[in-house]
Each structure stands twice: as C-alpha cells, then as structure tokens.
Image (cartoon, rainbow over all chains, first blue to last red; front, side, top):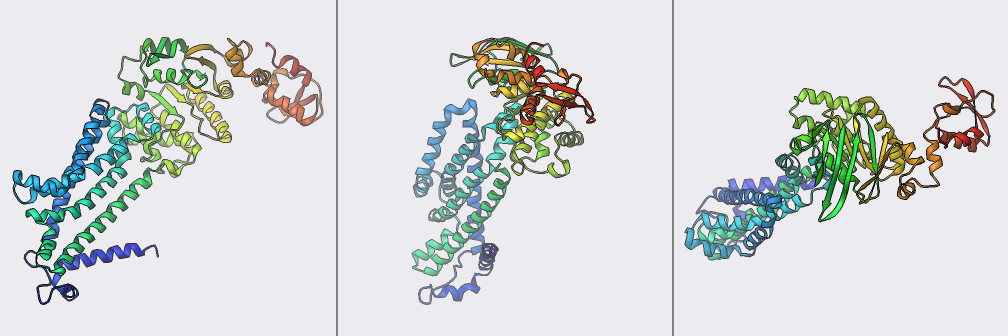
Length: 245
Length: 312
C-alpha cells in the first residue's frame, strides 16, 4: 500500500506526457466538455511548446528570485546588515501584497507586452516565501552548532557556506517549493499580456465559451504543479532526514 | 602554559570577570568551578578569544593570544562544549576532521587521524566513521565532540561543562576516560563545571570563581582543608568535606601488619570506599590484598578515622 502514492504519481506523469505529445488521442474524452461541434483540442499553438514556455518563465523567475532573496536574507543576518532587516522585510512584503494582475497592468506601459511583465510579476511574488524561509532558517540555527563552528576556528564565510547554509537548505527549499507552485498557477494570467503560457489555452476557452480548452489548460497546469511540488517535497524530506539531530 | 594576567570583562557596564590572574602549567588539568553567572565560562572563552578581554592579557606559551587572528588561534586550541555541537549534516569522520580540514591536512592524513581518535575513544572506526550524529547515543556524541576538539593535536583543550548533558552512569565513565586520555596525551585541559564533585575528582588544581572574581586556585586537598572563604566552604559542603578528603588517600597509605577477618579489600581503594566497606561488612578491621589478590596486611577503622582526613 505504501507504493500507491508513488504509482499514482508515475501514472499522472505518464498521462501528462502522453497528452502533451499527442493531444488528439484525448479528443474523445474532452469532446464531452466541448460546445456543440466546435474544436476540442487547442491547435493555434502546440501544447507541448506552451507547456515548456510556461515552465521556462516560472523557473527563470524562481531562480532569479531565489538568488536575490537568499542573498538578501544572508546579508540582513550578518552583523553589518541587521539594520537593514526591517527595510528588506517591507520590500518583499510589498512585492507580495501587490496582486500579480496589478503588476502586469503597471508593468506593461513600461516594458511592453510579452514575457517581461509576467516575469516581473512572478519574480516579485516569489521573493517573500523564499526570503522569509531563509531568514527563519538562518536565525534559528542551533546555538551549540554555531558555537562549535566558531570554536573550531571557522571564519565567518566558512561558517556560512559549510554550516549555516547547508543546515538551512531544507527550509530554503520549502520556500522555493511554495514559490514555484504559486508561480505555476499565477503564470497563466501572463497570457492576458501576451506571454506565451498555458494561460493562452484557458483564455481562448473562456472567450469562445469552449470548456474543453479551459479544462485542458487548467489540468495541465495543475498536474505540473502537483508533480513539481511532490518532487521538491521529497528532496526536502531527504535532506532534512540527515540534518535532524 | 597559559598565563592570565589581570583580565577583566564587562557586559553592558556590568563586570563579568574582575581582574583575574592565574597561571596554568603545561600538561596540567585545571577545573574552574562556580555558580552560574560567576564568570567561569567567560573566563574560559577569553582564552580562545570567543570573548575578547576588556583589560589585561592572556599569553599562551609566552605569546599574547591577540597576536594571531581569532580563527587561527582557535584552530590551535581544542574546544568541547556541553551540547557537543556536532555538525548534524556531516558524518562522524567529517566532524572529527573539521580542524585538520581547515588546517589543510591531506585527506589520507586526516583519515588516519580520524580512525586513530575513534579507536582512542572506543568507537570502532569501521562502524562509526560514516554515521551521522543523530544516529549516535548521547555518550557517543559527547566522545565524538571531544575527539573533534583533539583532532589537530592541540596542546590545550578547553571544555565547557562537557559532561553536563550525560546521565550519571555514563558521566562517571566519561570522566575516567578523559582522565586517562589526559595522562596519555599530556594535553593541558581547562574545564569549566558547576559540579564541585567533578572539579575535585578531575582537577590537578581547582579555580573557584564567585561574582567574577577568582576566590581560590589550589590543589583539591588544599581547597578542602583550607577553604579561602565561607563561599568556598559552602561549595565544598561542610558535611561532605571529611568524606571528600578521604577520597584523596588510598588504603595503601594506612596499611599495617596483622591479620583481620572479613573479605579483603584492594590497596588501590580510596579511603572513602574503604570506609563504605567497613560499614557494609560491619567490621572494625579488614584484610588488604595487592594486585595479585595476596593478603599483605590489614587496615583498621581506628587508623582510618585518626589519619584519614587529618593533615598528612
């Protein structure tokens, strides 16, 4: 029975791949949701390409957000940076309070339509969970371990890279996981400003009242989110199993 | 040799250590005792500069400890703490190899040293080398912590309540092991403890701290016989004092010719344990045996009472 969740995940992954490679074979299934004799499968752009572009925007935004958020968290937990902690906190909080739609609306006049405003919205949204988790990790390290790291004669940099960050890794990864999952769903609205994402399929379905389009776009995004979430979670658990003393 | 000269430290204007001077000889085992807040840990941490002195100097083998950088200094001094502070994400071998790694030893040399230390601490290298700290018992974690402190063969080992987190049975064993290792390696050990029993049992000399001041620095028997103040006396415990003094002499010292009935006791036994034997066996004299279980004489309760806790 323990293998059941793993089997389900493999099954979901295979189904997802099969659908992206050959969407037409799923047409009979989706035709029930289609309107009258309208098209069942979105054909203006290959779903496979859209899925990759969708993932590309999400990953790019998350990677950049991770790098900056982790660097900021490291900086404000050093002795020289503690004064900037409140400032850093408000900056990432503002990023989170701005609804992504508002970011898109504000960014378009400055950057034009396309990928850039979407990237910006996802990036701002991803900062908070990663920053907060890294900050929690760095400020709740076991005291005796830090004391020992100093006591054996590690310099500040050595402590950071060989003790502090490795110990925070599961928490940082948890922040990244939250950010990726949020970004995967939020990226769909990027298509309102012409970013090539799976949102395109959903929006087309809404405009033409074709529920089959909405369904295929939404299910592909949801499946990707679930699978990526589970993969990152499994990695996190493996890392923290070693670290829990 | 560690020379502490007129050292003071203040935190937020409040003195933590007041004008302390003491010299710790090479190969000596010194215990620092005091209540919490007496400044004993601060004093210890000033030796490896985890805390910087406000006034005074600390010299190690004649060299001011501020002449080298803090991290460099600390790599040359072993440091073991109560919660052992093992790095949870590193294996036992990696933990022990930390300082050699920082000093740039080769992988082979570090590996040999790790195995040597694991054997010294009675942990089979083949079994324990690749384990992680959370897979070890409390006693094993503590031993790995001390092994890590000794990895780069420091001349000095600083210990802050190293046995505080162990249960009593393991603690006694750990103390004995530490004593043996100290005799074997000749490392100078400075150990902080709040437990007078432990301080008396382990220290060649005991430093007693109270309110940031060094109240007395003397050999255990001296501390017991001539406590420098009421405070020291209370720390020793008036009722306990005679028994503690008995612990410093052994049956051999009071052996006399003659035959006694009862089950024989070893000449190595401390007088304290011998007294317990008298009570347990309900006798006033007992036969004494040597290492080969030969009877070599007797000891009487009378001589134990008269000579045991008096001046030698």
